[in-house]
Image 1 (cartoon, one colour):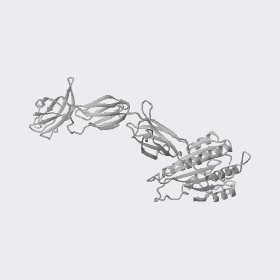
Image 2 (spheres, rainbow, N blue to C red):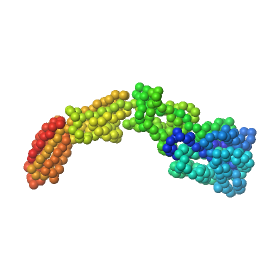
Image 3 (cartoon, one colour):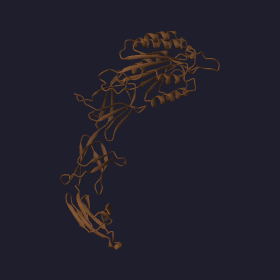
Image 4 (cartoon, rainbow, N blue to C red):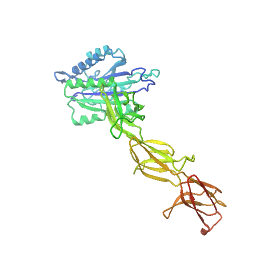
Length: 462
C-alpha cells in the first residue's frame, strides 16, 4: 500500500467491578496487533517501516519485562498470503502469541522472523482481536483492563469499516478509546479515522516512538486526582455529594463515589484510570457537570466543578404541622422542569440561584424568586391549613372557590355522591356552590361563604 505510517492504539477497559479494589492491583492484558502487510517493506527514514516498528516495539517489550499484573499477546496480519494481481486475502490475520505472563520471548522471536507479504485487513483483525482475551474469571475480583494496540502503516484495504467494528464492540460492552497516529495521511484519510479514535500526526520515527510510549504508559498506569467542588467564592469546600465519573465516549459508569474531605480538610485523593476521557457529574440539585476531563499518567489532576450550595427549609407556619403530608415542587426560576418535590417540614440542599416553588396545598401556593445563597439557609413558611367540612342534605354537584381581589378561583369539586366532604384549605375566604341532585332548576343552586383559619375547622350545612 502507498499510505504512510499510522498507529492506532485501541484501549479497551473491560471492567470487572471489583468488590474491593484496594485488595489487589488490576490485571492488564495488552494485545499488540501489528501490520505485517507488504506496504511495511517501504522505507521510512533510512530503513523499511517494518524494521523501525519492530525495533520500537521490541524496545517497549524490554521495558515491560518483569512488570507485575501484566499479560501480553501478539496478533499479526498481512503476513501469510502474498498479494496477487486483482486478489487479496482479507482473512490474513492470526493470533501468533496468546496471552500469558511470560509471552515476551515468543513475541520477540515472532517479530524477528516475520515477513511482510499481504494486505491490510484492519477491521477484521480488530473484530477477531476481541476474542483473543481469555474469558473473565468470576472468582477473581480484580479489575481487568483489556488493551489493544494496533500498529499499521495504512488505512483499511478490504472495503470493511473499522468504525462499524468499534461501534459493535462498544455495543457488546467493550469500552474503546483509540489513539490514532498518522504519518503523511491526507485530510480525507484523517477524517475517515476520526470516528475510530483520537488522531495524532507523526512525521518521524522519533515521534512514533514517543507516542507508543505514551500509549503503553496510559495502558499500564492509573494516576491521582482530586475532585474539587467549588463554592461561589472559589473555595473547594463543598462535599458529601455523590459523584459519578463516566466514560464520555460510551456513557459507561467508571466510578461512583461519595465526595469526601480527608483528615486535612481537603478533597480526598483518588486513583483513576487515564485511559478515559471523563464526564464528571456531581449530583447536586440541580447537578453540576463537567465534560472532556482528561488526566495524564503520573500527573496529579485537580478536577474542579462549580457546585456552590445553600439550604432551602420549608416549614409549616402558624404553629406545628397538623401531620398532613404536603410537597412543594421546586423549579429553577423561569423554567418548567421539576427538580425535586420537597416535603414541607424538611430541609433540602440546592445549588445557589433563584427558584420557583409550587406548594401542593389547596389552593396551590406559588412562591416565586426564592433565593438560595452560598452556605446559608433560606426559610420559607407555608401557612398551616384549616379544615372545611361540607355537609349537604342530599348528595349533589358543587365546587369550592377562593375569593381573591373580587375574583373567584376554582379550588376543588365536591363529590356529587358524598353526604360529607372534608378539605384542608389554606387560610382565606372561600365560596362554596352546591345544588341537590334532585333539583333540576339552575336557580336552586346554593352559595355560601366561609372563612378558613389556620389549625381550625369550619362546617357548611346545605
